[in-house]
Image (cartoon, rainbow, N blue to C red; front, side, top):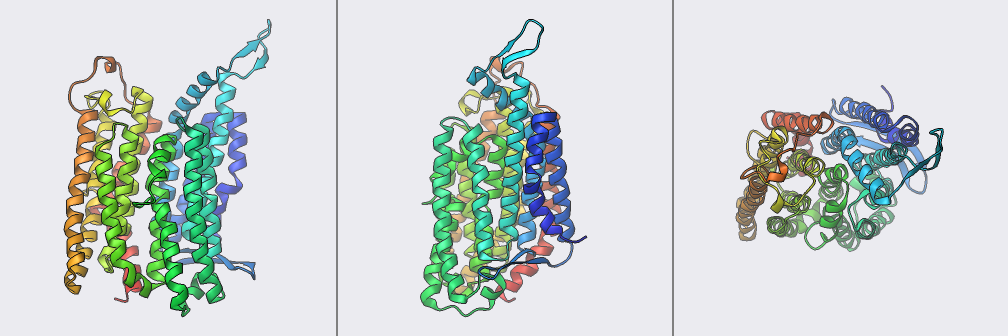
Length: 516
């Protein structure tokens, strides 16, 4: 089949108006299944394209910027597949959650319908009309958001990368601003301000490199000999811009607010999928294209990662709102990725990419657990929860599997990622005889204790202990919510037992990048 990647990227964008029309005219359920079917088809295209070693598509663009293309290699394929797997299953999960959210908004707005004596609508909007219109807008934005994330990962040109990087911010901003929790508009603006400023700093680095090389195409940059006077400032600008996207320590301010406020299906995309794209770009733009600068800055990336691990883990321990626990956890997990990226080791780098996969699976499960609590229990405050394991058994099992994945406990996918990550960091420390790297390795191990602490504490407070009397009638969520969770839970165990599903793509790429 031709144009696999072109279809996977642009079909969600081109058909997003159709999702709006279907939602408005045929209803919330029809819009849900249309979005799910479209994303499932696009995910299948990505999997088909990733069967070989590398799959590329190139198209003429403009002489000013170079070629427009898509690349699916050992680095991009795991990121791209995980992004669309999450988008696909969260399209289904969104149906009951967003229906709950739309009903809340309808009540808050006090929208009423006035009928004539013969029963026809005279004025106002009925609940069904309101839900259908809202669902159409939601799924249209959901598709554009999905497209932006995938396009960023597959881009083969700096300007193309920047365009997709910015495009994915717009629907995310609107999704938070329209359906987030209060004060949603202020938080949406904070999210947009931070991420856009980071993107502008990133663009300055791109322009410095592109104008120096005379081309913005990745292939030309990879072969170019760039002056050190340009290289170091450009690399620092790129790292800072991507640090904002990663919400690494020092640039993390926006994340707890945005992820805590966003509708839970969007939180489950922002945290597991979107912020990790910053790690993908560090791999592609710094590790691969600027190897000498990467070697010079790697120790600082490792230190930054350890600081981020500790800060995110400590803050997660102090939260009462379960979504903010997971938001700070995401900051900590991005620290793990930075920790591995700074290792200058094949295993360390491969472990960092495996950590992205395990974070997508584990944190997706945990945010979806939070959504079940919001819909079925009516609160996200840990101090008000307890003993829900008996009332929500499937949710509890999925939450435990998600937590074990983030903790890196076998047989989940998190074990392989974490083992490779720490092995690579220790390997480099011993080879170089570097005391700072050895200290960072030791501190990284201590940070894993923080990770286990806040997750076990969360599980105890939610699912164990005495059940409050007012929760005696709580029931398990419907299958639109449970089935996606069960799919992710099964997937993380399968990847944990058979990590070569992804490692057979990742390891050759990392060995090629480091030359061995």
